[in-house]
Length: 94
Image (cartoon, rainbow, N blue to C red; front, side, top):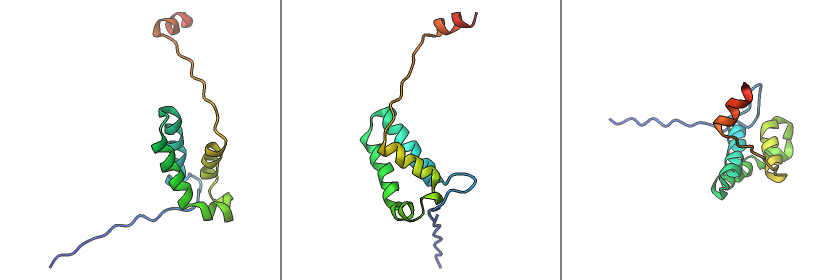
């Protein structure tokens, strides 16, 4: 007799005291898309938004972190990175 065990992880559709993993994933995928200039990461974030579109439309306060990620997607911000050599950083601390 063979017994198969199927584990199913349901998608959490609300952010509680801690944001849901789906919300954090959407936000991180968008950050990676910007850093890596990758459409693949952006598309994966869009897929998360598609899955939760109805919830975001009907009750956006249930997913504040995902809403923040959606705003980042809709209204991209420009990141500025400042680069310095290790030597210049060490000389500043003296």
